[in-house]
Each structure stands twice: as structure tokens, then as C-alpha cells.
Image 1 (cartoon, rainbow, N blue to C red):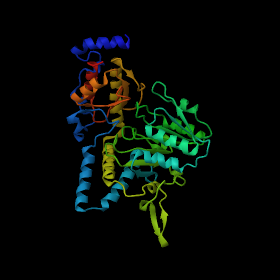
Image 2: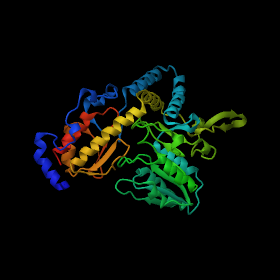
Image 3: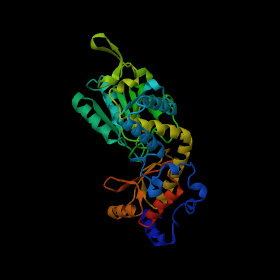
Image 4: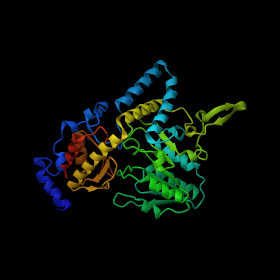
Length: 404
């Protein structure tokens, strides 16, 4: 049956329920309602069907309570020393959770800060090139277009095909003048998850470095940054870590700490005060923490990382990616054009829905279902988080089945 014929068929069968959906979606059991035991920690689940963590993840009660305690302490000017401890604890927790040493982690403000640090640290020569692909985030294109304009560095953009950009596609664009290969570890456009070890091998074979924008990666699958082979990675707390804006863990592989210098300096850069207003500066990744941080965000990060550690990243991965695969199957059966490739280890699913955008927006709002509509509203992006369940998937598929 063609996609058009299937849509016509679905319009006639919508009244009798979700006949078009995978049979396992028809009913959910009590055991499916909260398999990770986390929904009580996310009050958003009582207010709406929230499938939008790829945009902004809701703060957990765990993180919120930590921020409230911090705010109360600050209001009463108590326990000021706890601020510095939270910063240290957040670095240690992050390193433990994601396979890095504390000295390799600096807490920046935004994800793009990390990529800017790397770009400013490289000694670019005219004729050098940067390789990235079409599924990358907008910020990176802005950074490298400016590098192209200011320094004469060639920007090589690898096209996507069927929602994928495999290592072989990068090989055709990478050579001995490539200084940096940069990817969104998990694409914000369709959730495509890249093979970092293979990309690292390609980059290093050509004398280049690998940078990963990890904002859509940190928080829902276990990983070890050392084993991934990536040279630099940066994420943030407001998506899959369920913390807040303003605290962005930045990983710099230990072997690069001597030459990657900060692009700005301040009192936070100082390791030791020397005579006559001279200073010895920090040499670990803490040197990038040049100023006073947003401590409330740091506190939220520390609490959120502790909570993820308690739940277990392997459990979160199994749950979210399993639900995302079921969602993708259901969307395909509705005849929609799925942009996310099959067998993709990510909780993000994007598809062209083919529905009138205003009508769809109104219906989503009425049903309190939160997703992201991109590309003039024609592309729907769904992010399945650890607090989502099969009922959430059923609600979205049920709505779509009545509209396609």
C-alpha cells in the first residue's frame, strides 16, 4: 500500500482506534507506566505528555530541591563554602559518569563556549580545512563561516543521505590539511548518533582533532570519553541531564591541556598569586573557568548527575531507545516520511508528518502534548526521556493517526 493510500485508509479507520499501530501499542500494563521509577521526580508528567527533552529537558525535583537549598543558603548567607565544593563535586561526578579525569573537565557556561575555545586555540594556516556535516547544529556553521572569512580556512560540509553521515562520507572530505573534524555526537535534527571511535581514528590518521558537540548525547547512554577517542567534547545541563542552563561540562583530553589555552582570562584562572602582581595560572581544564560561575546551575548539575548515577545510564538507554524504536515503527505505519534512520541508538525521532501545521499545532496544544516542530513546522522532532512511557507514545501516535 502506498503512503497516500495508507493515509486514506487511516482516515476511515481512526474512529475504531489505533488499528494501524503496532499491536504492542494497543494496551499498556501497570508495569509499563513507570519502569525506571522516576516519574514522581518529574512533575511535568502530571501536567502534559512531555516528549520534548531534545529541546529542553524538565528539571527534576532532585535538581530543583538542590537549587532551593542553595538559594536559601545564599539568602541567609550561610554555607558559602558549599559553592566551591559543588563545583568540585560536579567535575568529579561528571568524570566518573562519563569516563574522564577531573583535571580534564572544566565547567563553562554554554556548549558553544567549548567549540570556540578549541577553534581559538588552533594555530590555523591559510589552506587548512575543517570538516563537518549537514546534520550539525547551527552554531558550528556560524563559527566556521567566520573562521573561513577571517583566516582563509576552507569549510568542507559533508552531505547527509537518508538521515545518516557514515564515516565513509567523512573520508572523502578529509586530508592532511584537515585540522579539525567536528560533529554533533547526536544530531539535533534527527537524532543520528555518530561513531566517535571511527571518526577519531580518521581524524588522527590525518593529524587532525575530533570535537563533539555532546549536548544531545550526555545523559541517556553509558560512555567513556577516553575510549571514544574524542579530543574535545562539550554539553550542557538543560537537556538530557535534567539540570539547568548555564553549566556546560567541557572535556579536553589530557594530552591537549598543555597547548589548548583559554580564549579569556580572569581571577578564576589563577592557581597561585606571586610577588609584584604576577600569577601562576592553572594548567588543568579548570583554567577555562576564568570567572565566577552560575552557582545555582552548578548545584543543579551536581544533583542531576548524582541522580543519573543512581538510576543508571544503561537502564535509561535501554528504556528510552526502546521506546523511540517503537515510536519510529508506529510513525512508519502511519505512512509518514521518517528522517531518523532505522536502528539508531538515540531517543530522538524526527519525521515529516504531512499534516496542516496550524491544525497540528492546535491539536497538540489541546491535548497537552509537547514536541518540537521544525523546518516551518513540517518536521516533527520527538525526544523520548527516561520519564516517558508507552502511554505517552500511544497518545502521540493516536493523535497522529486521526490527522494523517
